[in-house]
Image (cartoon, rainbow, N blue to C red; front, side):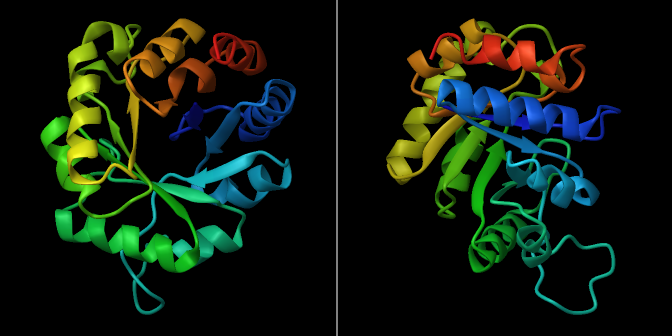
Length: 214
């Protein structure tokens, strides 16, 4: 089970979260990564925590003001990137472009989608993984694995029908070890979460709970 913590643009200390993620990963053997703002990638990577970008642009080097190049993310310590998060939606052609850009830079990819149909389309682009995140549950207190287990199972089936080498993650409302275990029981290979860790008074304690059922 892979736990990816997206710090979004929350006013948290990315180094505190990254250090906690590193320590819990080392102690538990779980795979935990942190996805900070682009400006914090290098600092987070320097902690030794697995570091992911929140987004990379579907561009190569050139006149692309405001772009986040996959090569720049990799040069600053990123090992992977999210693509098409519900708060950073892309057109299908640009999703494909971002996945290809990440591949060129040696980054792993997780492409997000709202529902099983989008997950099937995303899996066809050949990312390492896809993640189903119903927007209505993002930032809430109820995990998608509890509120709508059928969407996770259907998303697993949709991804497998296209390419059974593409892993399925789920996100939205994941905040406890029980949520992580439930996601695994439904066939998910990993979970995405954000506020449960980023807004926590004690990120390390939350991360310890998240891996407790693994």
